[in-house]
Picture 1 (cartoon, protein in one colour):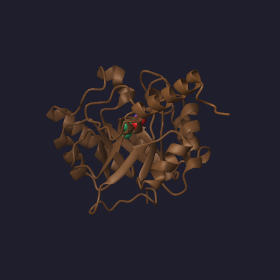
Picture 2 (picture 1 turned 135 degrees about the horizontal axis):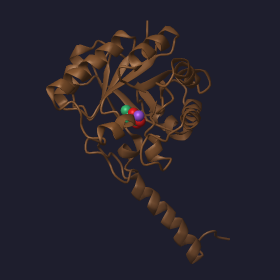
Picture 3 (picture 1 turned 180 degrees about the vertical axis):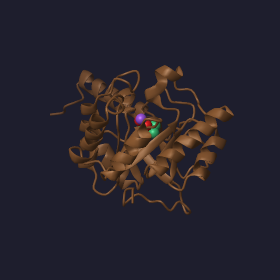
Length: 257
Ligand code: KIV
Ligand code: NA
């Protein structure tokens, strides 16, 4: 059997909730809030590390953040996103890099942006006891080739290719499939075609679960993708606190005697 023992697969009562995290204290808050799964997404390249895409994010950076999230949590499953070029160039290297997330960083599973080349890799990893989450639709590691981060799956042939790719990864042992930025009916089609759960981001309401990038949810991102929803005003809160400190010291109100 593939899959993480602790991931909830019964979605009749409520969809699966997944949220990204990259540090220990934030991951603890997410766990305490009852989120089902934490993804250490390579989107941390944009949201935390100051890169303008996920392409430059390194294996070491992802391992370091994954380990921090694992240290900050107790029971919530942690999925590590495998960064660009950590997989795909060479089979043995791909397996070792994915394995490091489990063995060294303590993750429960890895996520691979899916393509024809990740089908047999998924098969191999799951044979070895490494649970794999697939990722179809818009794939940021392919942004240069795709010409950006726009929606995919808009034509019938694109939609069919997305469904087929998801099916191939389920057959290879993936325990769940992220579906990113596709028309709602493609999110629904992938969900209906699979028996493992789909987790959507910009894929409409029909998927078995939802995932968003934490910085977007918090209101910390400078720009938010069209499909994301902001549930807080953390950027404003941070600015108010920092300016409050600056003002207090400048005025001589802090520290007091
Ligand atoms: O890196 C990330 O945050 C992701 C999610 C958007 C699924 O891959
Ligand atoms: Na990602």
